[in-house]
Image 1 (tube, one colour):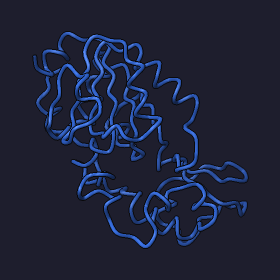
Image 2 (cartoon, rainbow, N blue to C red):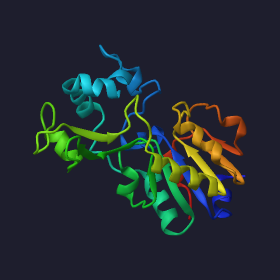
Image 3 (cartoon, rainbow, N blue to C red):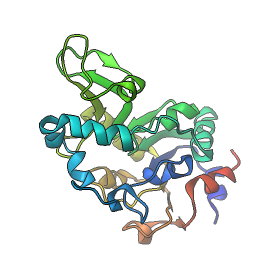
Image 4 (cartoon, rainbow, N blue to C red):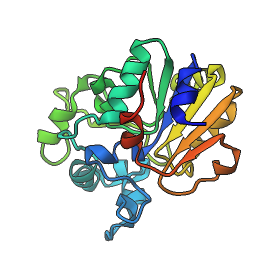
Length: 235
């Protein structure tokens, strides 16, 4: 049984992806040997990416955020483009992603549930005026709205809850799938990792370089790069 076989005979595919989906676009992941969380900082990255740190140490938050979380140069890779093609041809119901880079939409995907938000949406905490990621990248210090309010990225920081409407849509899509492809994730970030439990379909596939808690439950496990796997798929 190959992934191609499973894709060929499935009509309601859902893709659930993590940071490993974007590493082939040059964006580091978080928990691998070269990941962001293995780098040495005076303050741990998990702390600097918390809501408490954002509001208490806003200038330091933005120094780190601009340096490590805004890879606006990154382009979609083979996985992003193939998923968009699968959706266009009616094979893919939705993409559920833990990534905040917007590369799925850049590749053409329409139905994308961004569990942790997106760097491309930024809002004034006072008047809710919207600002682009480019505005944040080009600003200095603490970015301020025209009204003087603090601008916050629309990303889910540690200590914040996921958006209820996004969660509802993601869980519904996973529950409707006949094939669920989980890729590029260690499945260690909750509550997002628990959403795969909503799957009631026929076949479960995992694509990840390292072992995950889901491996034993899968019908097919591929220890390969996500982009390489999808570059070989025919739709």
